[in-house]
Length: 104
Image 1: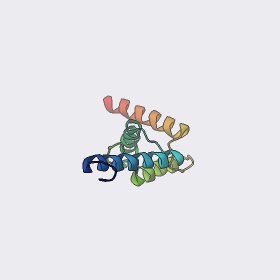
Image 2 (image 1 turned 90 degrees about the vertical axis):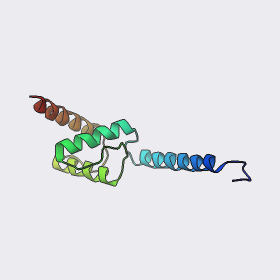
Image 3 (image 1 turned 30 degrees about the vertical axis):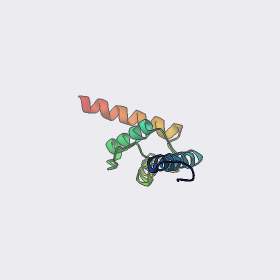
Image 4 (image 1 turned 180 degrees about the vertical axis):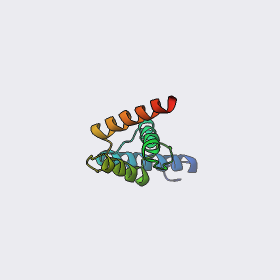
């Protein structure tokens, strides 16, 4: 680090940012969501619709992917763990209905 003229703090920030970017790149390559707001929506919808028990933290992890697969299987969709057009539309439709029913 001294050879690069970086402080420990700068080095730690560089490593943290690099690891995060690597994880985002891997996720994109695998067709996974990377937008934290979108991931929170998926986690919240899965919690409401299948009592998934997910932490709504905006991080795409193995638990979120497992619950996406569970939702897909239970709805007759291809269970690939990817929130594509069909999965996203069905999550939105069912979550909206559930929210409206709860408002009554």
